[in-house]
Length: 118
Image (tube, rainbow, N blue to C red):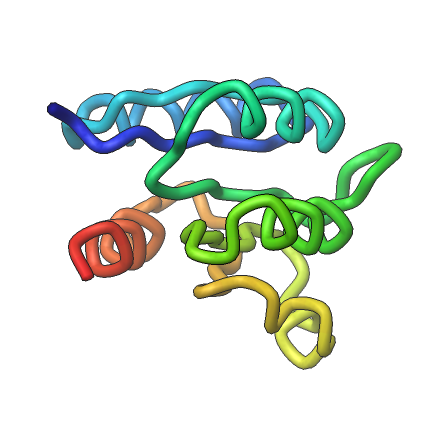
């Protein structure tokens, strides 16, 4: 059974790109366009890993990561953002990994593979 990943990203093109790359890599992928949608899906299904955009309207990715941790402490969380300054933010420590967005998703796929197969 393929591992299940939830991709949380407010930008439709980036969400589609990440989801397609992960499906091509053999994962079962669901998508959420914001934190509220992601929280609802996370409560309905069990995910092996969640990728989370930090800069989103409404609930941002750091808030979402904290809420997901409260629901399932063992959940694997990867923060995905265009802004590297979040790496030093204490709240980003709620995640298992931090990846700076790029059109080349090699690093993201490597991080996901490492975390999901731990």
